[in-house]
Length: 365
Ligand SMILES: NC(=O)c1ccc[n+]([C@@H]2O[C@H](COP(=O)([O-])OP(=O)(O)OC[C@H]3O[C@@H](n4cnc5c(N)ncnc54)[C@H](O)[C@@H]3O)[C@@H](O)[C@H]2O)c1
Figure 1 (tube, rainbow, N blue to C red):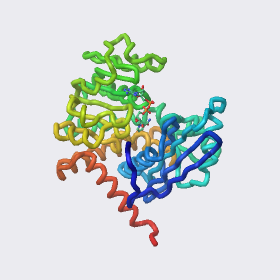
Figure 2: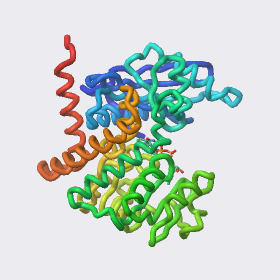
Figure 3: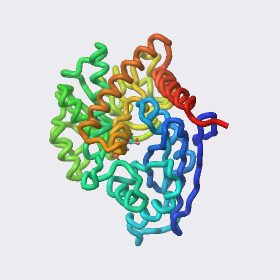
Figure 4: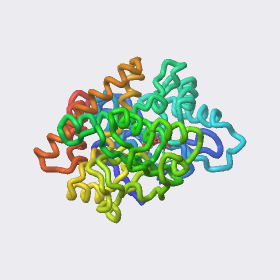
């Protein structure tokens, strides 16, 4: 059970809404020093205010670290009654109307919502990112913005001599939008993806899996463990495979003080949000495992969203992802060695410096 306390950064606003009978929503606008808040809309049966507030703070730090002109926010939608007869379109229209007055919050897709949901929100209130391309948007999961950003992290580490991507062994935990695109982008760089898991199992091949075939297999609705090009194994052990790069791209808190010492990766690129607890990150650091924190590593999606919001193209979005993530990883490495601190501390210092600099230009009373 996580706790949440307000602090000097935020939240600026916590709004509880009842958009229609049987449906509750919460919007947390965390910090607006850098501009209007961008953050996803999570639609799950269990989403809580604390979860949304923690995610909104992560967006504040991620957006600042990426040098975007945006603060952080997040929304959660929960059904409180059986709404089976009610379409997702009706839910999203009700949600959109309920948040119309929160003009400092720009919604995007997150767990349980996608580009078609954002199209509906945009239709109602003229405000949303991660829109379908038919509306001039850049559908960030379809184009693989976050997975591409993770590969850009690997590029930056290779530039610093910390990795050789040709022939590097990669393990991907979670094979959804982020995991599939990270696997494709790393395989394009010559890496060997030796292990992949999803919620139902895992597949392993020490010679390297055929990633495009595995992605096509998964997209047909099959589980990765049934892929004929490797041997099946249980999902929870993939994080322990000996590899150069481990990409957790599933859920939060997968690594904690009980299992962090069993991770056998040289580098972890955090695709998921908060995949490791603070204890786990300390253990990684102590064992010389370099773990690039989520707020730097998985910023590709929100960088893409910010470029879309500013009217930019997909090509511009990918160029911005490569530049911002490349620069940030280089700065993170410098700070980590100069200040002898954990990568997460370095990343937070980078983000906070940008928020404080922007705060100096905001009106104060
Ligand atoms: N989509 C983005 O652009 C983006 C951006 C930043 C952060 N994230 C974070 O990355 C993570 C993945 O997001 P996504 O969009 O790829 O989601 P997704 O739903 O498309 O994919 C999640 C994948 O994880 C798998 N999974 C679930 N539980 C698992 C388990 N216990 N072991 C192994 N695999 C498991 C699922 O089967 C699925 O393949 C989430 O934490 C999300 O918040 C996503």
